[in-house]
Length: 424
Image (cartoon, rainbow, N blue to C red; front, side, top):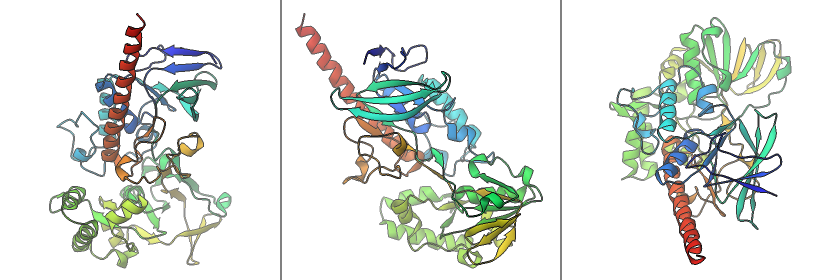
């Protein structure tokens, strides 16, 4: 197969890449899959190391999840100091909890600052390691070119497509008979159009809670279906962020003791959540995050509406019964005008990454003997943004991955220079 060099001075652009039908584009530096916060963080750090790179992104812009699949009132759930990407902080005039529009402004400015120009509209369909050539061969389909496939090749592949690449929507019996509207939270923008309607929100995570709050404030009647236990914590304790307090305590105390402290304060501030239908899991909020990846809910106002009865808690959904009916696992039935599945997202890595043995079948990095090394796999394979530690974890992984690649890039360049000088 003929290989063509794409000479990108630190970054690729559509005008810089040279492709041929059925050919291979040999790129300089690593291939990064995904132009969300994780991909941008890796690219920016590589740029600081003077290492070229090529970013492949399936959508038509950076941060597709934040741009196209989030609700209007969304804010970062953690203070901005815990959500900064490497090398650049948030502007001083941004609020403590930036809005999604603030965050997108930050990301666009970040990409511009480091001259990150992804190749948009490139959906990666396959990535395999060619052991004979010591190259990762990544096939991407271009939407703009009528679905034409191009193969990109590099010694290094960075998987930065994220933990939230595809929606998760449970299959519920009888859904086709439901007469009302059914949508995933990724399609929800505002509660305004649901005014006066009975809306069932399936899922009690941060998004489900906040959508119920938004629906309530827009005059809808929200019901929240809760399948399992959930930890609800106040967003702030003692005038500072709950997350910040937890991070400081974890430097000195074991996780179980920190969890006991958080739950004690939460009960003092919020009261007994179980009295209102929100049973707490047996494991503490930080421990369950470590074990399952499930984050505690940081309350931004929904809890007071649950206590007042404006947001009603109902059991797990068993089936749709036809018309506007929904049956719950306790046998009761209720009528709704709309159902919103706030059931989250999943990684899509297993559908296209065929080698490397770095990911499990559900798209999560395999547990390494040393957890801090989960960002690196064999044969020049890296993953960023899969640690379950949000933007803070993605930034840390990006720094590690970029430094490792830079070391290998510089070693390869030095070896090439020696060969060149010896042949003169």
